[in-house]
Image (cartoon, rainbow, N blue to C red; front, side, top):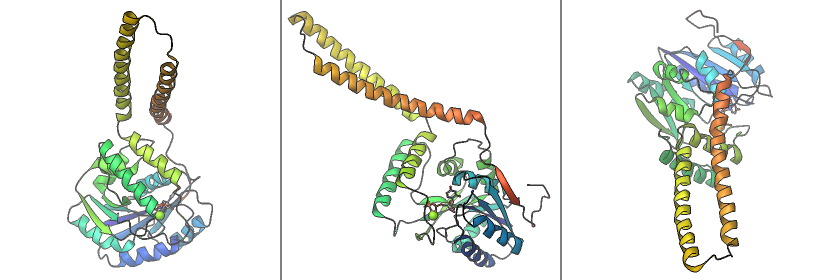
Length: 316
Ligand code: UDP
Ligand code: MG
């Protein structure tokens, strides 16, 4: 069989060579598996590209693609998946948080017939606040959206050709991979592993980015927020009708009662707030339609070094 590794790298000059050594060591255990490694340089500002060039020159199983700027990990992964030619593809981070020693086990499970082998980490050593935030996110999102997301299951996973082609068949611009991987389904199995902390450099996730990511997850997979807006609107309308009846009845039986400042101001502010929120929700969806409708490419390639081992002979 042929195994492709897809590694998105953004400013990982300190990590790529170490990762490459670890991956090569892990793959040595895999007999009768032909391995190719597809590195994607996501517009790094440091020496990542130079390191990748060196690796590709030294090792015929390495290919790399360098994007014209930083397009984000989702785009980098997509670029890698599109270039991977293997019967199975493993996506892994460059920072050694995805331990290559799991590769033999993942391949063994693939050979047992699984199409998705998810490597799931525990949260040992994570910062408390982040753990709590993540836990609440998964609870919220699983209650909210139609696909199941697993806490600790990130992008480190093996996908069979069937699963890769399914992911690539989804052309959406706004890619929420965790959801896409879960959405495609197929025979799935989970492998647990210990949490590894980042070896060098730093994570690009700030709390703000995580928050936006969570928001994306909530909005990306259904139109329930819009539904909620409708129900909220109906509920308020009902409330207004009841209140109106009460006010009218009051006015008819006891004459017009002038004071009403508090009620007025509360309803103006309250309704204004609700309307702006709902407008924001609608705006989010329209924004998505706007981005999708532009049909722009997900990424642009600056430089690419095709694999020497490619079998199909097609230009990449
Ligand atoms: N990455 C990328 N483009 C980006 C941000 C990150 O290709 O814009 C890569 C990064 O090089 C690493 C992986 O995605 O290989 C995960 O990034 P990071 O370690 O920052 O995320 P975390 O592990 O904290 O979720
Ligand atoms: Mg990381």
